Image 1 (tube, rainbow, N blue to C red):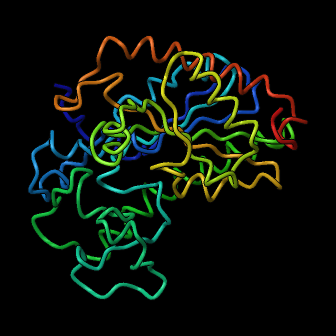
Image 2: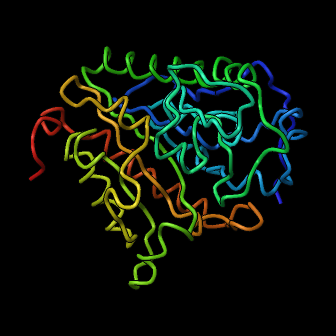
Length: 297
């Protein structure tokens, strides 16, 4: 089992892997692959380390690790999703986990908050409660200040720099999904869904982008669904503005393909999956700008 990493990079909350020279109008982001757990967070939790890790998109940054050597930057969070979630609005705050009144600007009624998965999560992905005690508002706001905002400032800068250089930017928000849960109905219907592509039902990126990724994956005999059960989270909605030249697509990968979900360990198939992503990166990088303004043929 991969142990939780000690909080050795207290002042570093994300990492950007840069190409020697950016040659593709692409940015790859992995907001949920972080595993740097602060000791005080571990002490405050009623869960064991392996249970806390159930919310991670473990190893997703490795799966898309080919992007920098192919000419596109990759940013990934180092802090864990269970600590603070950068794929949420900045202040989707759950009143159930704070010991005081929340500010008026907090969004306390979103579906994510209701599920216990707001910006500061109340539960891990399998529904288990994280905390022994309630948090102070100051604790939550400090996490947002030191982790959430630096990640988004860096991501925004990557998107803007890419758009300035190439005239447009394609942001791929990279995630993984448990093989259980929301995919249950698809499995019951006899379909082993490997990928879910979320483009907010066609609003966050040009159709050619979703279509290109889908075609590459289907050629590799993967089962692919669009927008169900994951249509795209905050990052996809917030950054995806096709009319302004910024496109965003969320890719969810079934964890069963590349990892042991119970033990949180890589399978040997992870390397092959990473090789498959090379074709995805290459196909997206080869898209002509005019295709981003048209329906795919």
